[in-house]
Amino acid sequence: MTRLRIIYHKEKSNNPDKSIIDSNNNYPRINIKVICYLLIVSILLTFNSCTQKTSNAFTTLKGKLPTDIKEARIDYGEGWENLAVTREGTFADTLIITTPQYVYLSFGEFTTRIYFTNGDEVVISAESDISFSGSNAEINNYLYKDYQDDQAIAALEFNSHKKIFSQKEVPYISYRDSIKNAKIDRLKTLSADTKPFQDFHQKNIEFQYQYDVARYPNYHSYYFQEYKPTELIMNFLKGVDFDNETYAKNYSGYRFLVDLVLDKQIENLVDKSLSSIEASLIVLQDIKSPTILHGRLNNALYNFTVNEKNMEEIRDKMLALAKQERTKQAITNHYNVISKLKPGNPAPSFEFENYKGGRTKLSDFKGKYVYIDVWATWCAPCIKEIPYLKKIEEEFSDANIEFVSVSVDAPRFYNTWRKMIESKELIGTQLITDNGWDSDFVRDYGMQGIPRFILLDDKGDIVSADAKKPSDPKLKEQLEALGL
Image (cartoon, rainbow, N blue to C red; front, top):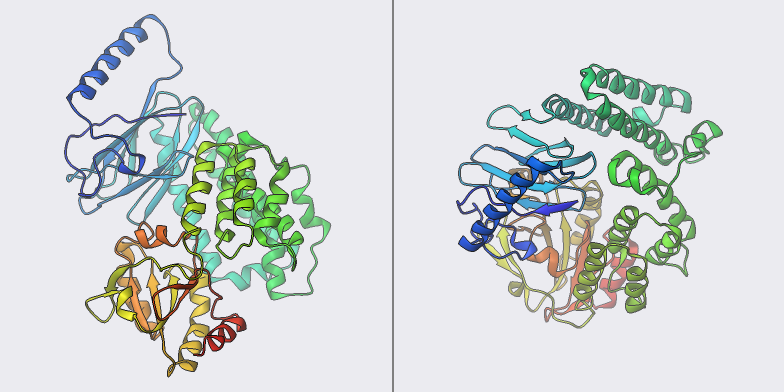
């Protein structure tokens, strides 16, 4: 797949810090010479199409979003990228696509899959309700509804987690069967000329079904610790090729299933002498799929912190495993950041809005130790740590330490952040980043996930850029060892 950076609108982006072309990719701002060049290429391609059929036709996604939407993101299978959205809410992006595939589009609180084939022009209208026109309109309107149904199921399972996963194996499998069969039946209501898509999408439904059944032991054992899965459950993992590049590129259900299996293998290797990232590198040695390796190595970066003793050796092993340049670049970038976060180094500065009013800088805490909790309102593991954090804050209320919580909630969750502070009766200093996860704060501290905890000394230098979490008794020991 090749990305074509063709500009459809000359208006400036709503974000003054970004050019109409994604500045993260360091493309130059378009000029008259570039426009002329693109016109010439377009004419040549048009002439060529009269003489022979090309397999690399332009494929476009364009549309109109509500004018209050300031940003949109798209994932063509190589990670999320920002789209240039005009003041009027219009956008367009172009690529060359050689095989059918899903594309993911996200803006505001909306996310959906979109199905693309070679040469498509897909149009989305989202000014009021969501609707698709252009190529594969029937399919993409179906996928929008299908994604909403998936979200509804996820919400149901979140709210009824114990009820669903406390079931015994046979009723639980029957529950998953009913969901799978309903999805396949709905898929078959599409017109006959969508048969290639139906075959393509049914494969993803079946992989998702296998994953949902295979993850049952993890959740059921949470409620019944003595539980051991029977062959009935384990048979769902038999006969699956866990190193298939075609499946990995096309099916999220397959990737979830592979992650489940590899996570278990890593978990079985981790002990007192082997860290999680070291175990990951052993398990990944035999994987051939570049897509699986990219995802797994990116996941491993979460555990690649300055606390690792052999940082350079781990970096080199990860680079040796990586098969894609984007993977190697992500590893190198992460290493370059965390290597600056060693104990004793100055902590990267920041300045954010304070819940109580005004803005607060890191330097405002000079003379005090600082324990930073990085969290978000949507992060379940973060919420789980709140009672432990409040207890630590109370125990050290008279000590020379400031407890600072930094939310990485996106701007659209700003009110949710304020309400949660009130409902959870959070104490300490409550801050929120200016642009959610896409902030210098996240990049400067090499964050790959949350919750994340950072401990600084009274001079503003790093004690631990990946400190113990509040629920870990070792945190209290560490604070007391500092004389607090």
